[in-house]
Amino acid sequence: MQLSPEQLTGQVETHLVYAGDGRALQTACWEAFGQLQQAAIADGFDLQIASAFRSFERQLEIWNSKVRGERPVHDDQGVNLDLDKLEPLEKVHAIMRFSALPGASRHHWGTDLDVFDAAVVPVDYQVQLSPAEVAPDGIFAGLHAWLDVRIAADQAFGFERPYGVDGGGVAPERWHLSYAPLARDYLSNLTVAVLVAALRDSGLELLGPVLEHLPEIHRRYVRPPSSEDT
Ligand SMILES: [Zn+2]
Image (tube, rainbow, N blue to C red; front, side):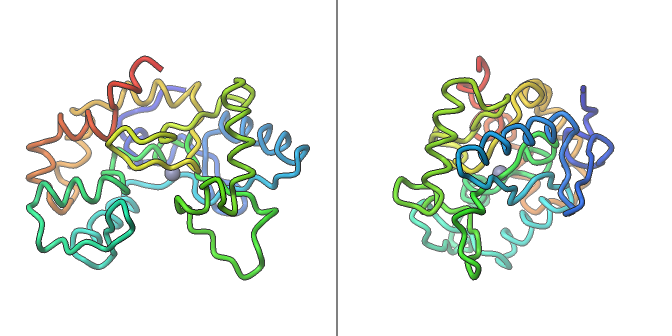
């Protein structure tokens, strides 16, 4: 299914199918995820979704609240940053290491989701989606080792990890899965021009520095050269 610029940037939801729990994905992605879940269950993992579709508006709210200091922004070591001490462009980079620019989140497409293993979650445990949880000694290590093998063997029903390793842009997110048969095309279609159109009148904080440096931001966080031939 081809997506319009508005679908690609999460401004409309016409490409999505909602599940009973309020989560939304595209039909083809729901089907593939169901297959992956069945394979996981057979091997003892209860593969569940922590986050699926996220709208432009929601991503904008996250972005703006981080810029305004209403939501913490941390560095690679998990230490909270004082954004007041950073130049505008430095603020953009600090935020984009861990949060997508509105319009540029892969969660807009209905092909991308964050997962965890509900089989190992204690009743009083709040899933964080943190590096510690997916580390070799983390609570979700087993699920991710299983996913590593499946993805490497091309037996993950089309899912891959776009943020599996650190390329200097978006920080590694092993919990983030993407349905490649659709998502790879969407990434090619998500051009600088599409982003400019979505952001121009959106009320985005730091709009000036973002637009001024958008080609470089796009190359580093949205579509790094390493993603182009995969
Ligand atoms: Zn994600």
